Length: 169
Image (cartoon, rainbow, N blue to C red; front, side, top):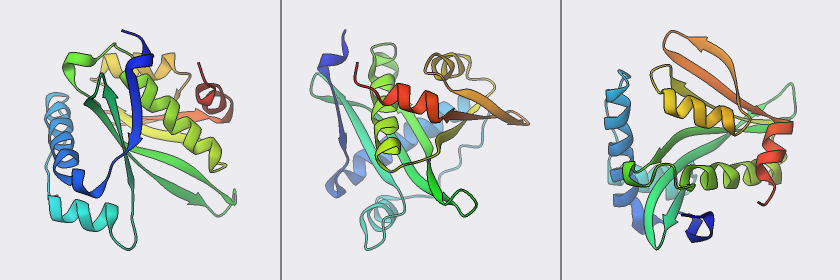
């Protein structure tokens, strides 16, 4: 299945229940990777913190043939020394049945475009050392492991990889 069937779009407030469902699915996946997957959020918290007066993060959905199949939750971090932000990807989750269909790559390309548009220095995120498939995926996109703390790998897509990923295919 090609990426022409994939639409990446911003989530809306009325989709708070769907955001929560994806967070729950991501938590279950993380638990399977032996990561802490304790949830303390709710629809009300999502509405307040993502869509309130001061949104603290943003959510993208990827639709495959009209069905929401994946989500990404991200925000910007600011470096006073660099004088510029970087994009922090807090959650990326692709439904099992559509993995390897280009959905995750489409989300990562859109995130890279957003990072470039906001003049970010890089993109960063974490993954479990137990997530072999995810690690391979991120490396194929040009990301590198910048650090390891216990079972957590810190990934970074530096400016060249980020700009390459942001280019239309």
